[in-house]
Image 1 (tube, rainbow over the protein chains, first blue to last red):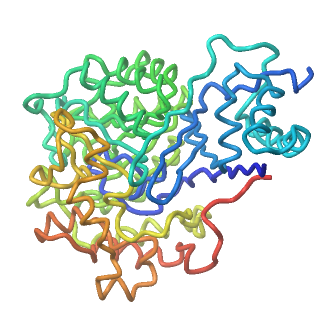
Image 2: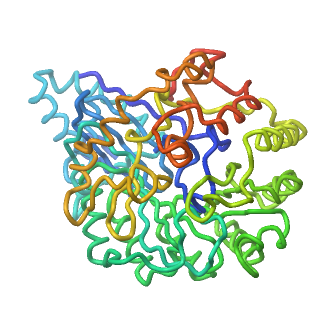
Length: 36
Length: 452
């Protein structure tokens, strides 16, 4: 069996993408789409 | 300790998730406290799902051998570097004796595509009346979900393969069961973020957030001074938000500051950034107030040209701080803003929307009537927008930033024009200023890296 595991990079702090902020103290993610 | 006789166990905050999709199995090993993700292949998934503390390495090897037809010796040899990697990355540990009870079995779901995140408005009740609130928060919606319904929903989300849930409002801290809801979510493989205006945060609230392992708390900052911020949010809201930031910071809880850009902030945007730096804010976003809720038709929203001028100030400040070449993170190449691909918004009355910014008439179901999975799989609206691509737009197709922009916020365009489309002028302003931040233009590095 070939075992593989890719550890993904954690997001950088800088927003990739501007998002509307009056949508939230609420809009969940720093970008659309969210990088969950 | 003889490793063969020991019992591998996933660390407490790690969970395994598998969603069978149209394009194959989507598998994660996911840390719900940090949102760190690892992608296993099928063989690694088979090993990881047995790391529940009730089987020894020897027993697991025997099972994998029977499954694959390979010899136990070969499996052991191949497994050794994987186990080392999982230990090095703090994903598993080895217990000397069986665990009682064992870690839970992985959650598995069938969906057309994974639904990674949910934004859940637990109430629209709010103690502030912000002039620019996207959801007209203040009073509760009619027929808000009960605590029991929210608990059932969270259980359903976990079984649907959702990884992250954002608790929002209204002001979530006004919900009498906020901490029970968070505890329910944290007992499942779900990471939690909380969005709050910050005015109700106390030492006790911070203690409970910390205890529950909340990933981050987002607080809005609408000006560099109390005068500017309070003009939008109300008396004392600035000082209370600052106090909340200090308490969260002291507790080590990551904070995100959302900076809403409006006409009155344009002269003090750099001062806001200096404040965020002084407070040690972990992340921030700067974006114009959208054309939604109470800001629709208001006189304090800015134009794309004004936004571009503000971003130039921001960039100049970042350069002065030595952050000029801070690049955009890699991500999937976008065909649109992420609508129908990444998350859903569930309102406090159970109505489901593609994102918070769409008006109420774009409701794609209610969780009291259909499951979230059915909505995600079968919504005509979602399937329609999934077939749409920014490359259909002449201007976007020619733009070098299309892969990271995706054409901009489709909901905002819908709000302004009544049609679904692309070419959001605020996105164009953003990428006019940040034209050197696009990873896809400058190299071909893959979106993930393997840590060896």
